[in-house]
Length: 305
Ligand code: SD4
Image 1 (cartoon, rainbow, N blue to C red):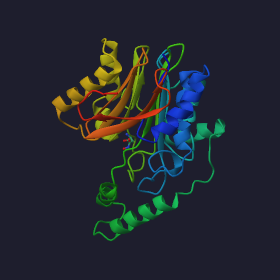
Image 2: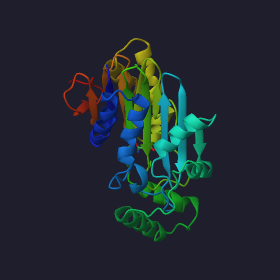
Image 3: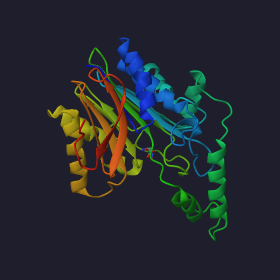
Image 4: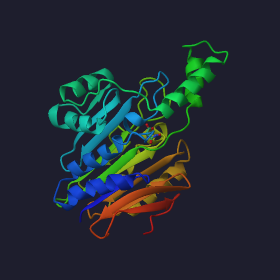
């Protein structure tokens, strides 16, 4: 059974785009890349792509990754600048290099080689205004500019920004692919990397299932959330129960579990989601639906359709 699932209400647009590919016999790999590009190309989004909030120095640094569960191939880029579609760059890393993860300047260099480089990046007016406001507030504080305290003031001022696009799909050949893309924590330190480009944390896929996470990367990565979900699937649980079990596990641990949400999908095309927030909305489409749907899961609960 074909299916595709994506994080947050904006995931609906992503799912629609990916479903067009799956419906016409296309691969999960193409579907996930297209879904994520759709969101990266929306410059009104402040948490994905070049419309996102910058780091404390005023530069947008993006994280993205893709994993093909049927081959265990994966590609990932982190803290990359001047790229509109980091998910496509991640796919290029996967398909054209022997590596999995490329960061910073090296990733920007690859973007030039693959024609994914954007020469001039202007912050969106709202993002620029917000960055300047925070800079001014930090400068007016007694800390010395450039000191760790000055930086921490800017980072702490940074509003928590939790809208990574994460997407998982299964195609007619039962290939499962997971991907995600984000501009990360708003007003982060230069070089900060979240969970999204880390295989096992922000995303994971194998032949049993796949998962993609969103929320506070610092918390998602210490629990290897996506691998944890797929582990439960591998041990025989359907995607919705695996999601529920993962959240129960996190709640039992009780440490560093704020702002963690994720979507999951299994080899039977069943899907689920989980959250440590009060609730979490996401989008899904599969052969059993007549059209893409927006769904919601409550904290610690199993998804009810
Ligand atoms: C991150 N999980 O960089 C990602 C992005 C996100 O907080 O979901 N924003 O932490």
